[in-house]
Image (tube, rainbow, N blue to C red; front, top):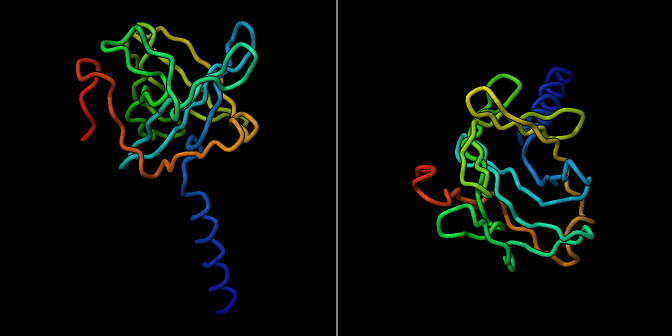
Length: 173
């Protein structure tokens, strides 16, 4: 009986540790042409889905030069030109089998695409599709060294997704 009880406790503990989705967390996007880091995105849960928010971007030397603390760069392809840092651009990722499906916004041109997201070899694969055509990017887990020293990370459990403009995506209820 003790072995059964210990086994159940161990199984429950393992399941609890795995409760967070493998896509959740901080990810670094890499420029496919030059291999340099571009930005940090946080994938966070809200209700039963996952969303992606840009929280910082890098200069050409790989140093974070823009963040949610002090945003500077603007998404000129969107109405109102919101800041990149703090912008929710991945919406309503819903787990379907081994992948998550939702929508992704290209803030440079304002186009919204179908998104398919999954993990592979510890990386996040993000694919955007429009009418069957698309492209994918490989994102890597962000490391502490990717952030400026002393940067206080936000509590993602308190994030509420906000679409940049209602014409692109209805507000999340």
